[in-house]
Image 1: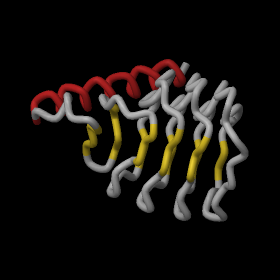
Image 2 (image 1 turned 120 degrees about the vertical axis):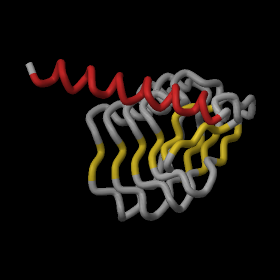
Image 3 (image 1 turned 60 degrees about the horizontal axis):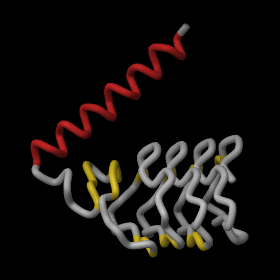
Length: 130
């Protein structure tokens, strides 16, 4: 029963973030970042370098995108659920020391993903993360 409310709260939070980004006039920027949370990627590059200052990659941010590589910033501590799921072209991911959590299904079904070295700072890896 509580799970239903949690899911609704999560959806409401994400919706509020999108409204705030639109009000700030940043919703169409290449990287949409609010308070250290990357909530959307509008770019066309296939090689991604997530900007310094990003602490969290929001759920589903790159889901299904035709990206081939990702470099994480030194500030990143959390990769959200389904952040890179179904990115079938994704091959290389460079994770940062300081990263703590890779949530469930973050890299789910990335068929071309090469082996990744997990930093020693990672303390939690969700189910089906890879």
